[in-house]
Image (tube, rainbow over the protein chains, first blue to last red):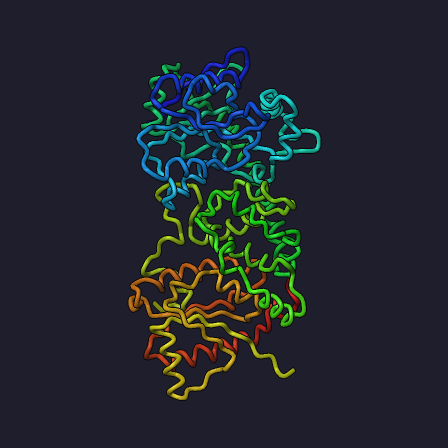
Length: 381
Length: 140
């Protein structure tokens, strides 16, 4: 099934190799456009760009340790209606997993899109990345990559990759059509390119690249990375559970929340087109606030902060893929990702579900069975 | 202040449990008066946020009660409710709400006796558990 080839790395420059690879992909004409992170010329920031002209791809940088948004949302915008053209999208593993959730929620299609997944060593938060990158972004990407490969790790000065990435047990894409692999690959002279699905294979064949193989070294390197991440994750679960184990602690945990709802906007799987928290439902009469204040003696303004977070947990925790964009978007540095991933681990386990695992698994709250969970009604059906 | 009496918010469906509650009343069956019934057209429209809001406003317990499986007026609303209760029973305990404070029941239109009994049992159980933290402490 899966076909593996290698991309030769020239002059040990990984970035230049990837740039050339994506350019060839576009030039071959099998795809009409490519969605890929690029350094924007006007400012040295990395954003997803949709490129149709192979000449406009020089700033391509999927290695940049930053993703200002979860691109699953962008891919959803590109595929929510049938498309005549074929596109390829370059995504991180968490972006692919979020996209899988969106497809299942009928907010995207895999039909005309080739998912190219990249191995991922993690990313800095948006603010941290700006400091890390300095003036030359592409140089920074290579610096990050070299630090990781040489064993120095992901930390630089006082910053490190986001906790979401440290806790991410999916550094290698699992549901892409095609995977570009570098974990456990000797990237001084090659990159791994693996086609997983038929559409990935089609694209790969035309490239005429020399055959490669997934080595034991790679498997071992992935295993090590994953187990490191899992131990960080489990510790995080325990600590977060402890820090939010009752409503008083939860209130303190979310104490700095100003109800800006950035976490919801940034969340790739917060699927409602219009969130109830910005509708008339919460446009209370002024007298209503006074009524509440009189009844309770004191209310925090704006109101409904805990209510908002708990509702979001109920609505989307079963789809949470743990990308950490909620924390990235928080203006007050609330560890939003930690609590969402922690609760998500319980809710997903309860329904024997794992967000982003496969297109076949049904989203737990979109389906039901006639006979199930009858312990909830004391055994009565 | 007298003895602690729990407040139970009961989301009941129009077609089955609300009718059962009505029957309990017209049959002069006694059940604790600390139940606040909220009539919904179907348990399938009880969004988890209604339950969360009830707790955050100080409810000591929440009951969601609708038609028996197969009897739903809207075919399958009660099955959807069951999944949501399952979900809430995973989320709320992590923030200190005892699982027993969330209850799901199937009570048909003719089961007034069952309704009164469920409410009595629930009130007794919650009374033993005591008030929730939200009620005891001022939560902002």
